[in-house]
Structure formats: structure tokens, C-alpha cells
Image (cartoon, rainbow, N blue to C red; front, side):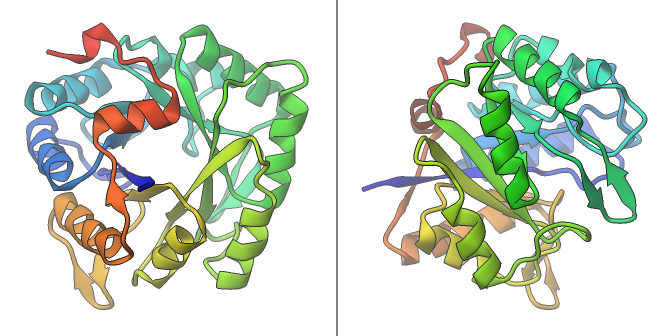
Length: 271
């Protein structure tokens, strides 16, 4: 039976980050069924930074408690240069990284990812022997990957994260999902993120249509149900696992996620 990778993005943008409670929450997420943890490089106050010190502290606390695929973000709206955005790749325990492949309006901000920046980040990811998860906010960004592949050979499978729900980007409608998914190349696997989610219908539809990576967590939404907020990220993972099981799928362990994503587990990822 094909398995679904659950990725947890546990930190809401702009909120303070406390490494120990975060690690305890993520460990419970993995126990519930998550396989990957996605973190931005932040200071304790939640602001984005090129200094990887606190990112490493957070992941070290997580890895003391559980095995999980370590995914660092190279994105986020900020004044950081692309070189600064890529500093998390230097952290030796990073196994996967988000790769943003186009510009978009993101809320009230303009999120800029020029082809020059995309090529730089793509090359940096592969130079560090890290597997990218490609974040796409509209259909054109899928074509951008085809252009970049002309000069930078991507490893198979190429992983696309179709992102819905941000103001200025693709909205979480079933017809949009169907069209967006139809543009994923045959050489790619795909998953979905639903920012601002207040119900689970869209995630269920994505899984039914073939999404094999599903992201959940406070970075995108706190909602367990309309009007009901989760206190911890693991509550969201528990509900997603129930949904996946109800659809007769299983969830992937971290080891199985590495196999699906073609990640060679780093020896240093164990503490």
C-alpha cells in the first residue's frame, strides 16, 4: 500500500520559538505519525535570520527525542539575500530543504525569487547533497523548474509542494487543485500545503487525487475544525493520521520517507 508522508511545520511566522517545548511537541508529532519537520532559520523572537545557531539548537533538541527527516526552509519574506537564505544548508543534519522557484504576491508582500536566485539556491541544495522540496504557488512555477533543469540536473524523484491559500496565490478550490495537479510532470511526485485551512476537505481531496506528502502545522493553520483551534501541533497530526487511515492509506515512518524521497540518511542525524 502506498504511504503518505506527513510533514509538520510547527512554528507560526513571527511568533517566539522556545526550543524545548517545540522539540517535545515535534516528538509527539512523530509518535503520532509525522515523518518530516520543516523549520525556518529564526531567532528566539521568531524573526528570520541568516544565523543558523538557534535553528541548530531547535533541531538538536528534536533529534535528542526522536528520529525525523530534517527539513530547513530557504524561503520566507524578508530582507535576506539569497546567499543568506541558503545558510541553513550548511547545517550538517539538514536532509531536505524547501526550494522556492518563482515570485508571487504573498499576503501584502511581494515574495521575490528570480531565475538567478532560483538557480543559485538549486545549485546550493545539490552541492550540499540535500534533497529539495519545490514550493510552487502557481502553475507557472512548475514550468520554471523545467527551465532550471536545463542547466542544473535535478535528482529523481522531483518533489513538488503545491501551496494553496495565501493571498495572492492559488486558492484552495477543488477545480484549481485538479488543474494544478495536472501540470505536475510525470517525473515528479507531489504534495500539498493549505495555508489558512479551517477545515479538512481540501486535504482529503488532495490525498484522493494523489498527494503523497501532506504538510500540517501551525506555520499554516491552527484549526482542528471550524471554530476549534489546536493547542499543540501533534493534535493536528493525530487528526490527519485518522483521515489518512479512513481513506485506506498508511503513513510513512521517517525511514520510509527517506526512501520515498531518495534521501540517504546522514550518520550525523542521530544523537
